[in-house]
Length: 579
Image (cartoon, rainbow, N blue to C red; front, side):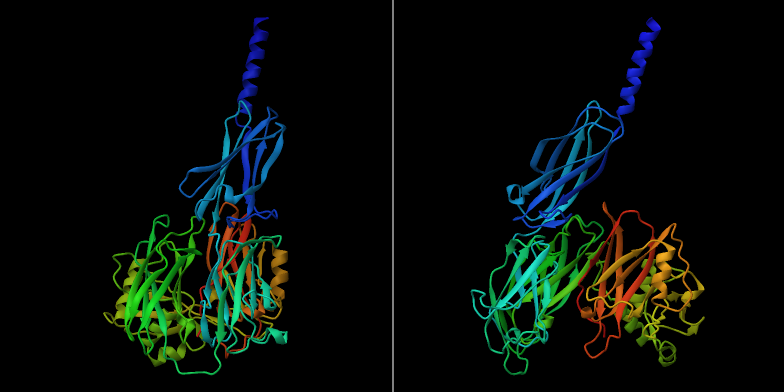
């Protein structure tokens, strides 16, 4: 009899030990009023908190606790009481209709933390970050009261509030009625006014005062934030430039090794006009959030004078890269150079002790190198496009030192030669008949630096770019190719060349196609990174010059490591067009 009792006691202990690891967190998210998962909100919205767990062994009731932490880590919201049966399988609970204003204190990165307990199991927890942006929408351009504008096209710009949509309204009256022009976009913070609008009333008239306003909308079209009303007018006749204040440069003066620390920026403002300017406001933002000490003011800037303005900003916590923007708040005769942008990512800036060397873009670097190659080398490179630069026998810092010495004049290029190892690989451009040759990178050898055009077909190729009329969508297309059948169908619509071999058991192909309105000459992928939701891909377009005809949609196909989660594509606006 004693043995039976011991056996029963042991069985109970084993059952409890098995259930101790039965509860696991399966997913956590923050949703807007329309049920869409979002990472950025404004403080006038309501949100839904959702938490999901998996129960491996049937047991006691599951109890949930929801908490929200502010940017300083303090708990500003907590809720208990949500429960679910302790049955085997996935259990999900959510708390809906929470006004952000009930816990909001300051713009920044907030954290939703969910906890679940089923006695005697230990508590499981999971967290997700989200951003609450400024509740206000700040109009940037045209500045309030601007007169004599000559922009073509006129581009409206503003600092957003985190809304999923924005509505722009333009009217001849301060009450914004009747409406001259109105659009709703998909969350972008700029809009180019059509040069040939469909309605005659929408055509902007020179010297007529116009009023404009931006409203932030949620997914259901409800207004959740709004700007003040600004006014502007267009120039009647062209005149010579006499006022021109330029943001010449925007640079980082602190280390980017740790994006959680404050980042220091320096904006260089230059008066290229004929007269002194007074009380010039200078604004700066990073990742859509204003710098701590923005705006600043330049009391007086004489003609031909340059002044530096320093700012301190934080990278938004949910971003590994962000666009820094510095603008002067002035309406002069050349408004296109009133702002300067810089894409900021980890380890991509000057450190405080880095001297005064200029950070060159790929295109600027290629232009500087070709100046030093000589006429024979330039002739051999005719028709090629600079793609990347490498140094097979040196580290990244050594290559940087070589290039800096070359560009500064401390070193010279000796014995440069161009050798071609094969024809250009077939790229998917059969629809237009155009082909873009791939340019090679530089190999640094002492004493000479030889440049070699590498044939991409000689090794595995993981990227294809070009134009194709197979894509004719009015909007940007992004997609993921995950199997060979889909890959073959896509490739055959682009090219008659042999299908490239992709190992889809370990790889997948990312695709990005521009829209006709983008006039993209090139599509480039800037970065890709893993997030809690899957893979985040940042990309941008290089716009074709106005005088160049774009034959079809520009695209890029890129082979990357296979991911099982969601792929989120994000377009970056880095400004400018190719020259």
